[in-house]
Figure 1 (spheres, rainbow, N blue to C red):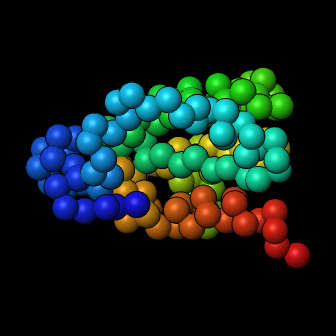
Figure 2 (tube, rainbow, N blue to C red):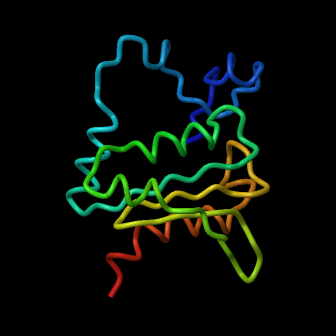
Figure 3 (tube, rainbow, N blue to C red):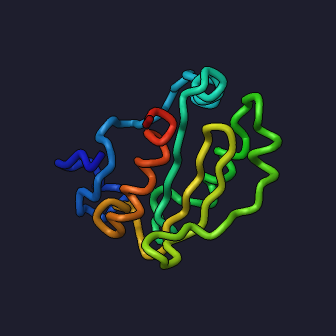
Length: 135
């Protein structure tokens, strides 16, 4: 989202590195994000997560654990999948797995700003969301 201002002071040592400025971000938050994602997937709406492997603010390992744990109809099938090579223009751009509308991408050579670091991989991620709706 890259919302600027003083948004990233704590996480990015004063560089305003792209965090949303909602202080404190999730303190006292009772919204069940996992259930909302499960409902979205169970309704047939595709969901894609993509992480730069060099991102230290939004770590891809924790993100993968979250995606694998979404309590939806195909949770066990998705969680059991091995990562496969994500290829863009004949070159390996990262790793991916996808099942029944949920797609997980981890992008090589990218940090927090995948769109700036690896624009083609960011485009690839967006394509996973619209493929279903193309004729």
